[in-house]
Structures are given as C-alpha cells and as structure tokens.
Length: 311
Image (cartoon, rainbow, N blue to C red; front, side, top):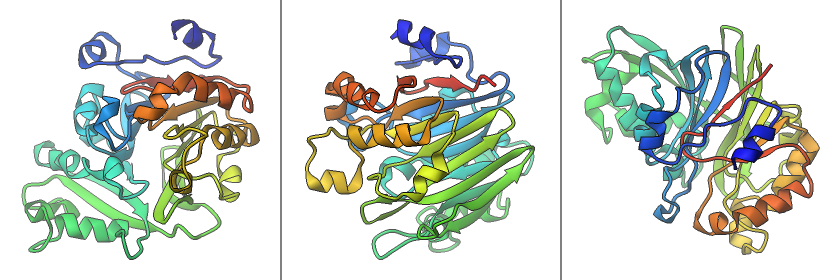
C-alpha cells in the first residue's frame, strides 16, 4: 500500500485505520484543497468501518460535508473538523448509511460561539423517501419533528447558533443544478440512478481543482459522464462484485461499470469508498478489474484517508 501511494502523481493519502493512528497523522488539508473520507463502509457492521461521509478541506478548514452515515459523527471529531467552518452539507440520499448521523452533527450548533449559516442540500423525494426539506421538517420541525428540541436550527434560535437552509434538487433534471457558490468554490449536483432511491452526486470546483463525489449508483445515467468528466478526483462506491445479483446491480455499479465510467471521464485519480464485507474480501480482484479499463491511479479509501489536490 505504501508503495502504491508513493507512486501516485498527486500528493497521496494518509490511510488511517484506527483512532490511535488518526492521532499520529497530521491534520488533513492544512493548506490547499483535500478530500477526506470520514466513513468508507456500508450499511452492515461486518466491514468494521463508518458508513459513508466525506469532507472537503479548503485552506485548513473543513468547509464542505457530503453525507453523514452512521459513525461519521465520531470521525468528524477525529478529523479535527469544526462546525463553525462548515458552509455546505450535501446529503446524497436517505438511506441510513448516508444520513443517520446528520442530527448528531448538527446538534453541535448549541456549542458555537457565534451564529453561522449552513446550506443543506439533498434530493427530491418519492413515495418511500422524503425530500431534503421534508426530511429536515420530520427531524427538526417545531412541535412535530423527531428532534423538535432542535427546531431552532432553522433560524439560529432557541440556543442554537446554526442557521440551516434546506434545499431540494430535482433528481430528474438532466442538467446539473447549482447548489452553492462562494470564495471561488462552485458546487453543482446531479441526480444519479440508485434503483428506486432518489440520489445525487456532487461536483465541487475549486481554484485548486475539481472533486466529484458519486454516492451509490448503478451507472446507467449517461449525463453523469459529462458531469464527472475531467475531475482531479472522482470518488465512486465499491459496494459489490461483478457476480452480484440483479437486485444489487439495480442499486450499485459493479467493478466493470466503475472502470468503464472512470475510463470515459478521465479523472486524475479514482478513489473507491463504500466497501462492504464481500467487496472487501474481493477488494484486490475488484480493483484489478477496474484497472483493466482505467489506467490512472486507483486508491482504496479507508476511514479518515486524506487525498490532497496537487495543482
């Protein structure tokens, strides 16, 4: 692994496997722009990893959070990220392994010194899943939310210092939606096919380069190729094998499809996350399949892995 990381053309990753190791490794993103995985696992505890979540560090501050699955609350603290630096939260979809720790992270708004605004973006809903604004109301709505005592999150009131602005992105729109812009950073979102689950991918364009984060998807939407093309870092899930059943393929892209997407979009680096027990056992073989299509550097992410942009 160390030999692989030394060979990468971009500044490579600190692959931190445990809290004790995290304390020994310098903070990710002390300057420039970096992607750090908070969780690299899936929805089953057999992978011994936190579920999906990632932050984007910009000049030493964790400015962007994408997904907040189970375990990411702990990893967020271990990373050194501070809630008062956060400008944008994107939730790709409302499976628990991408959203369950969001209330725990936002509760930190009680402990800020000053009021701070955060943009919270997620997909539109359907019969089985809420929209982002619907989820926010179900969780934090005054008098009726599951965590109604946090209703002040919508206005930085009632003891909370976070002013959270929720916004829905139509997953059916064929063109990317601009969801945030500030300090030279532009974030767009595009719907991706995750079976019958409304889901989003996010493209983060910075002065130092572009990072595209895909949550779970089966790889069948051609618009995603244009959305991801030319990224400095493309992050894709590695949840299943090529011999997965039809139901799994309806939800997830197997290694062959991930490799073809990477080959078509030409990222400078491919980062794999969202490993599950089975895909971890076959990890080396699955990466070999991906490399049969994509000939750039491939990194198998772990919790708290850090990938700086080198421009």
